[in-house]
Image (cartoon, rainbow, N blue to C red; front, side, top):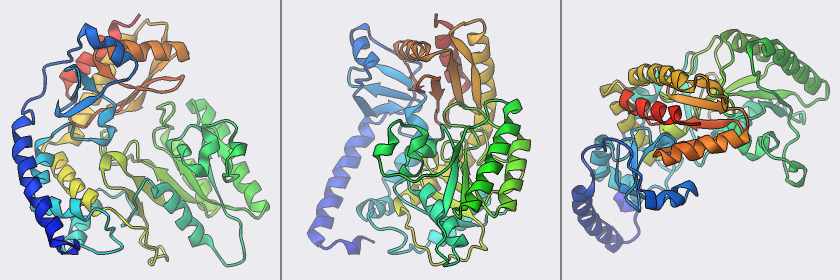
Length: 428
C-alpha cells in the first residue's frame, strides 16, 4: 500500500518521523486509569465555560486530563471512543506497519481498492453481528449512511415513470441534524433548501403509540395519493431527544404498516449500536430493511437484504476505520464488554434512581444499557445539573431543555457508575 505514495522521499521521511514519535509516545502514555475525578478550584471557571483544552496523551480509560491537570470522568466524549482513552489494543494497533499503510492512504476508499483480507474481515467481524435477515453490508464515509440508505430505497422503488419519492421521520431524531430532516430540529427552515418530507412525533408514552401509528398510516396514505410515495421510514430504537424506547408491539405494528405500503423500514442505530444498550444492535419484533451503524462502531455504513437489485451502487468506505473496528470487535469479545454494559447499565440505573428520588428538578430516567438520559423539569434545571456535574468532575452532554445524557465508553465499570450517582445525589 505504501507504493501509492508518489515520492519515495515522502515515505522515508514519514517512517523516520514515525519511529521517533512512537518511541516518545510509549513513554508518555499512562498505563493505569486515575482513581477518580480531580478538579482544582483555580480552573473551575474554565470548566464551567467548557473551555477545556484536553491532553489526550495523558488521558486513560474513562478519564480525560485537561491542560490544567484536571482529571475528569468523561461519559460523553467517549461516545465515539468506545474503548476509552489510550486502550492497549488500539495503541498496539497504532504501532503496527499495517496501520501505517492505512493512515498514509486514508484518502483511498473501498471503491478505489480492496485489501487482500477485507472480505475476510467483513465475513468474520460484521456478519456475525448482523441483524436477522440483513446479510449484506454497505460502507459509507462522512456520516452519510442515512442519506445513502434513503437514496437506495428510492432507487429500489424507481420505475422510471417520474415518481417524486419522499421519506418519513420522527421529530427529535439524531438524523434530523442532516439536511434531509433539518426541519425536525431547527426553526426558520424555510430559509434553507430542504425536502418537504413528512414528520411525526415520537410517542412519549405507551398510551400515545396508537395515535402515532395512526399518524404514520395517514401520512403513508396521503403521500401515495399525492403521487409522492414514502419509500423509507426512519426510526431510532432509542429516541435521541428523550431516551425513550417504544414498545415491542409498536415496532411490530410499524413494520406491518411499512410492509403493506411497500416502504422500507430504516433503523438508525448510530447512537445505540455496537454495545451501547447492552446488545450489538437493538432487537425488536419485525425485521428492518436497512440498519444504520456508525459512531461507536468506528466504521460506518448500513446492513441491508442481499436481495437488493442495486449491486452496482458504490458509496465508498474507510479502510482505516475498518481496521480499527477489527481491533474494537476483538476487544469487545475478549473483555466481554457487551455483558459488562448490560451489568453496569443495570447498576447505574439503580444507583441513579436512588440518587434522583425525591429531587423536584429531575423528572426521571430513560434509555438503555449505560446510554441513559437524566431528564429535568425545565431548561434551567438541565443547565444547573450539567454545571453541577462539571464541578464534580463528570462530563455529560447537555440535552437541550430536556436534561443531560450519558454516553460512556463500553469499559465503564460499577465504580464509575457510583461516582456519577454520588455526584447526582449532591445536586440540589
